Length: 137
Image 1 (cartoon, one colour):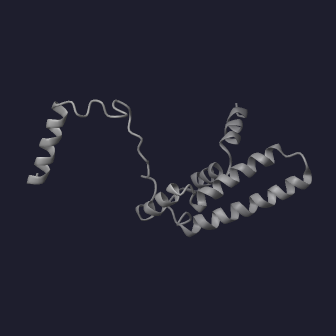
Image 2 (tube, one colour):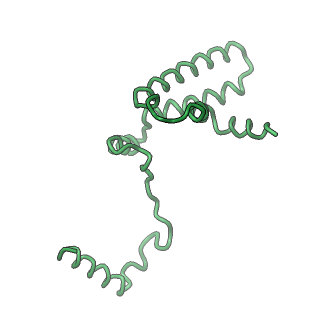
Image 3 (cartoon, helix red, strand yellow):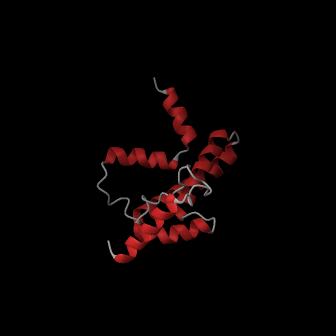
């Protein structure tokens, strides 16, 4: 440890002995960490800027839109509305697929069986997935 680190550590220890950290807000509660471990390092700064601005990265917005459209399709009763929603969903899926390919999705070493399941999971709502799993014996 260099001399600066040892001074800092000494002052922290003294503050702990004096109880200066005892009444801090959130004491004893788990930290709220931003889990960005899954985000590539070169994208973390831009994702953080988008998050702070209340925006989503394009692939996440597309996924959100696809889930919403899937739920609307599941509830839709009119054929004309169904065709319109289905067309919009197809366009979102194509854009999402091209975006994922541009980001290296296709070049991964992921086995084909898992790739199809992951794609399905990303493009259907959690609610639809749960109902499918309940139907299976």
